[in-house]
Image (spheres, protein in one colour):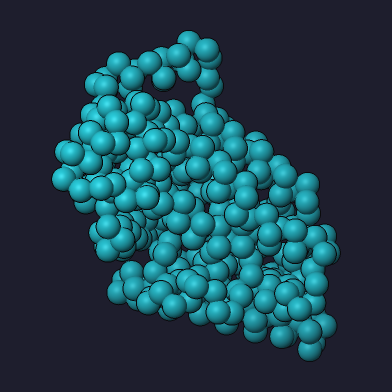
Amino acid sequence: MTSKHRCPSAIKEVDLLEASPFHLAFLISFPVALASATMLPFASISEAEAALGRNLTAAETVWFRYSAGMHDFWLYAHNIVFLLLVYTLAPLPVALVELRRPRAIHRYKLQPKIHVPVADVLRCYRNVVKTFVFAVGPLQLFSFPISKWAGIRTGLPLPSAWEVAAQLGVYAVVEDYFNYWLHRALHCRWGYEHVHRVHHEFTAPVGFAAPYAHWAEVLILGLPSFLGPAIAPCHILTFWLWLVLRHIEAIETHCGYDFPRTPSKYIPFYGGAEYHDNHHYVGGQSHSNFASVFTYCDYIYGTDKVIWHHLFIVYTCTFNMQTSGVLICLLLDNCRDTDITKHSL
Ligand SMILES: [Zn+2]
Ligand SMILES: [Zn+2]
């Protein structure tokens, strides 16, 4: 069995960082010791209003009451909580639909003959949560001093809607560009066999498989998400919103369905579920559709055309098999029917 046709039931346990109580204590105390106490410097709302020279908005009042007595480190530590919550909740609706597969919705499934068993989804979820807790969590804590150095702020005033929108746009473009090149590099022979192969175990991805990857890949491909906020520092509320939206975007592109009129379809140059699903479908030999959010990088660097060559081979192969009855597909790597035999229906 080639690695690109590996059945989800053959998912390996992802190697994770070992964590002892000493390590955890060190991970927590290190950034706390580095950071100075940077809670809101106002004792009351009236004091904050006097400093700003105006009344607080409703949102600023809520933020003051929530964060005034909280150390910036604990605010920053919310990141991992949001990641776990979004990862647990966002893929659930489509996963529940997948259990019943109603015809009205199933017609939007990108690989309709493939059904990933529930046991494999649960195994995927368990491995991703381990990666979040033992790899992403410690990195988040260690990166707190970097966030302070970069200028992520927690105080008042809160940013305007325009400022938030502009920053999110910059972050998406920066993340997409650097993710494109890192993802493309992971498709070299060594990178794929030792790291990226894990993510491609799902040839027909599901939402829960969005962050399913070798822990090193989760860390490597997570870096571009922090690059934008490092270049254009924002309020921590914007940072949380960015992390949540980026996570939801990844879950949508892996959900296995291409629903019409989803809000993301109105974003210019947005890739979407079908775009990334094709990348998974072709698998390890894929040399296209590397970008995480948009399509322009693949267009500019000429990696948007190769996918059609692969898909042409696959569909031609499937057609030949159906018409001649000869199992030509078994001789080729990228054959949908070969996958079908390895996924229970
Ligand atoms: Zn890939
Ligand atoms: Zn993927």
